[in-house]
Length: 86
Image (cartoon, rainbow, N blue to C red):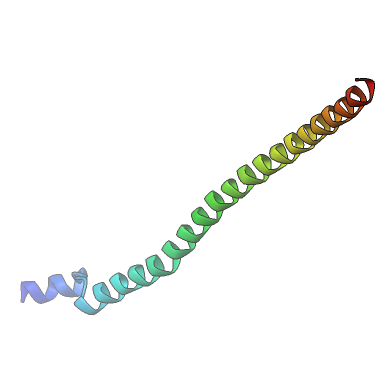
């Protein structure tokens, strides 16, 4: 009888297995949704960094190519002038 009175005054709340299972499945579902998103964002970030680096190298190589072409043109011009003098 004392146990029944105690239950009526302050019922003990126990976590039922179904409630625990639902909470666990919810966490797994949320993790399965969030984790790929985080992975894709990180992958895009690192890929964009690589693209920016390659674009910078490409621009540098283009400038160097223009400079070298000018040097070759200058050397050709000098060579043509020297050939006509001698």
